[in-house]
Length: 187
Image 1 (cartoon, helix red, strand yellow):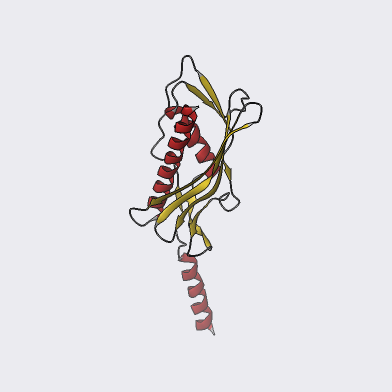
Image 2: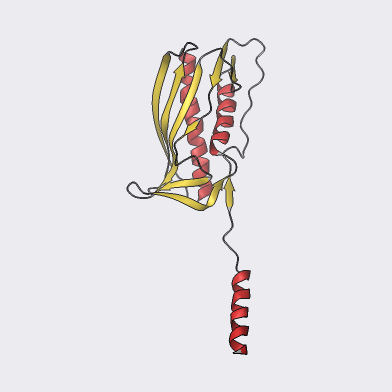
């Protein structure tokens, strides 16, 4: 009986010593986003609304789409901070750098057109791609819709790994900002 108790105690002790898998945290702006120089006489102002995320993206876990419609929410790979917060900062910095002569603001300003981005997909996919999709809308100060544009971007992952996925998602977001800035400059 004493041996049984000793064996159970030893088993419990060893089980307590086993380590859980490590958490890994990822940031979209780890390499730093380019900051625009201050504009001395701004010609335009753009008001940014916070990026809106679909319910499945509004969490700390990375999302991976299996074959079909099954989604996998990673257990040990997580966003370092809120995804919408990271995307808001990247958007402000990215559009400020891409739109010289514009003041890009997120502080509730009401002067100038208003940009809203809804993000439906921001995930990896079973076929080795990073997928971003949603829509962006530009509203006039009086609320009229000036532009309402859906987007769907796919980027091939050059190698395996969640770090690669996060890098490609970040590059896809930069590609989206290029498209938005081009449209804003037109008009």
